Each structure stands twice: as structure tokens, then as C-alpha cells.
Length: 329
Image 1 (cartoon, rainbow, N blue to C red):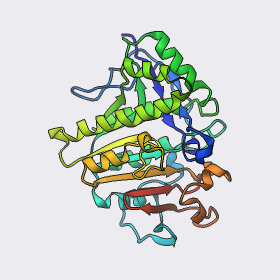
Image 2 (spheres, rainbow, N blue to C red):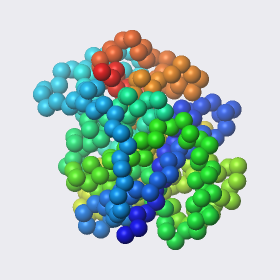
Image 3 (tube, helix red, strand yellow):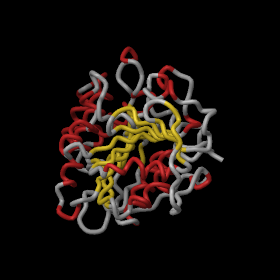
């Protein structure tokens, strides 16, 4: 069986949060020929086929912090924006989930080249958080495109060419880790799903010319919202969460002016009656002294020298959280 092609089109946090003067944020894409294994029963995902070699694995995320079943001590207040310092990331996640969201929208800053020695956000979520969501979540939408084989190769090639210029600095292992996330979700009984752009949507991106990246961002938000609402309506998903995992722009519950069409947050918040949580996950070693990082609401209140071995959780707005992982070993 021929393996469908996939592309990782997840927005890089640093580009997404730049000042308006810097123009549209860049979409991240990693071309490949792997596919996400289908979940049991009917699914929108293509079945796995062929073979591929996974990228070299970074150190286990367990070296950062492991979830614990023991009684959790009270978190320590650590400043503004409702800052709380937890002993482990698992305890911080439990705090975030206390509101009982129907949609948990997780955003990340993608791993960059030369960061392979530090466990990525995707790897940490897969190893530290996903097991805790088994039984509580019905479905996982991964921000990974499945290329429709009916689409013209020229269409797909032109879209991939638009992506190359903005993905050169990213880790080559990003797509493999997204695929591993979907596979582990399936193993835990959480149905994984890819985004499936139509051929007409590829055409629209090509016709957008210099606005191709903006067109991609709008499409990602639109497809994710539609998929999530469809999954929420399934009878076997009643009372369970739908997880959306991708770049930390599309999940904004309160998008910055001019970027409303790039986020599915407001639409899904309304669809769930406010049972929506935006959770941005940050690897503290990836935080830089730059204008893009300084523009984030929690940045002025974060001191990397304080609580280095704690999971620091900010709550900048209702339903919006930023979790900064403890320093890596």
C-alpha cells in the first residue's frame, strides 16, 4: 500500500507572537512520507503503510519530571497572572483540568535545530501528559496534514515550496514526534486525527501568492474547528474531552486584533459553552531574549532563576494557561 504523504503545518510560537509590524507569522512545515496509524474502528486517518525510520530520539522526557500518583502538595504562589509553582508538570496539568473542559487546545513552540539534546514539547506531552488523559479524552486532533492523493502534484509541490523558507531552522525530528504522539494516543484508546485539506483548499493557497502563509493559517483554524465540533457531537464522546495539538497561535481564546481568523479558540469556546481551555506549553531552555518572546503576556513576570525545578503555571486570562516546564536534566 502506498503511504500517504503528510506535512507538519504548525505555527511557530515566536513568529506567531511577533509585533504586527513584522507581518504575517510563518507556518511550519516538514514534508515527509509517513502516515499516522488509524485508530480502531472508522476514522478520518489513512491506514499506516510502508516503512520509515524514526529520527534519533532525544533524552527521555522523564528526565525532566515524571507524573506521580502521590497526593499533590499545594502549589506555591510565584507572582502575577495567577502564577503557581508545582512540583511536577503532571500536577500543573491536573490543576488546569479542574474546570472540566470539553476541548483542551494545546499549543507549543516547535523544537529548533541544535535543540535535539533537550526533550521537545511534543515528546514531553506524549510521555508526561497523554497517559493522564487516557479515559478522559476521546479524540486527538494533530496539526499534521494528510495530503489527498486526488490533488494535483503541482498543487502540493507549490504549497510545500512556500513552506520551505520558514522551516529551515526547525528540528528535522518534529514531524516524527507528531506521528509518535498520534500513535501513542491510539495505543491509549484516544482516537487520533489528521487535518485533511481539500484540493480546492490547496488551490486557494496557491492563488494567494504572497499571502500563502496567511491562507494556510486560516485554513488550519477552520479545519480544526470543524473537526473538533464534529467529534464533540459523537455519542461515544459524550462527557469526554477532545484534544487539539499544534502551534501556539491557533488555540488562542482571545486572538490579537487582526488575527482572529487564525484561531479556532473563540469558535470552540462558544460551541462548548465556555468549556474550552487554551494551554500553551513552553520548554524553558527554548525561551530567548527577543522581541517575540518579550511580547508574550507572561514573559515580564517569569524569572528563569526562580523555581528552576518547578513547573511554573501562568493564568493570564480565564480559560488561558501557560505552563513552563522545569529545567531539563
